[in-house]
Image 1 (tube, rainbow, N blue to C red):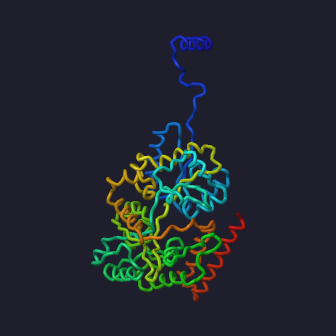
Image 2 (cartoon, rainbow, N blue to C red; image 1 turned 90 degrees about the horizontal axis):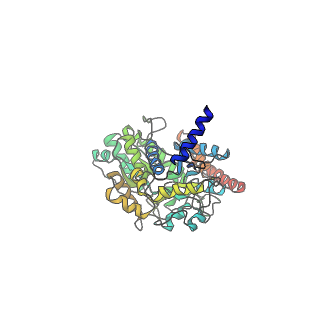
Image 3 (tube, rainbow, N blue to C red; image 1 turned 180 degrees about the vertical axis):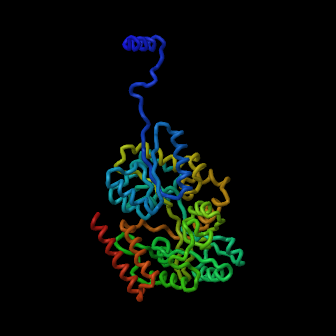
Length: 427
């Protein structure tokens, strides 16, 4: 009986010209995996953008993973080590050398030459930010600048204003006046990444030397200056000590604890929505006796392709879309910084929100001649380890366990240089 029914159905299809619902040889969409880090607002808009991409590219399916920054690289390292690297990887400026030199990232230069990677309307200088040793390994997601993010309403309460480019002494005086008038503290940078880089760049130096074989300075006084500034700010009460904050998140810190802090310009949207506070931007305070501007424009993060990916064509299609398509930017805005393609910037300009106008304004200021210096080369492969090491040394300073700051700084520098040499030997 069943056989008769089957024969009847086959005959009906042949006579009527009906096409079977499932055709032999029909191709399934190519599936790629994309990973990134960020806060909830970034996750939300990125997922929306990915859904739009898949609507416009039904032949590509995107599976995605995201996490906060603190756990991102540990998860990524585990995936890479297990042979499960994502097809499209978000990578930061501090890690690009390590991932490129270890063979994890695909060389993108051939795709630029063939036209498979679309670089139209992108300046060579911007694209060069993804170069390691002369080879392009990643495409900047956007550009931003290190900034001081602050609550102008707190300053207005105290009858004060913030210069767009304050000096260290001007900022120190503002901190004292704000504390006296409002009881508010600050959260200025005491880290290796922004704090120390801003200090040494003021004197034409960098965290690392140009050939990547060691630190970019040999005088511990730069580090000592930052630690002494921190201790002075704690003593004056303009900075919260260890455990004194009431905030349960970085965003929440602006609600009750601090009125200013060190960030990157693209973070303002997340901090405003997370804290429900109106925030303003200036460049990071410059050293009073600095010889050159410490400000610079920087790729926020990069899109890169795993060298092990079997779906590189689809991965390139995705990167081209998130770089050039205005449909993408209608959703994500400036979350990952100011777009690198000039035509996309022109498209966004007329309808910028008040928040985005602040980002464009600070970017335009820094881009003016005499307000910045060229970006440094990508950090050494050992940067992550050195960043952690610096945190350990600084923690001892925070807890009052160091009697000789100069010797303590020199010990850190010696250990940091050893880590750099060790990473070079391992390559």
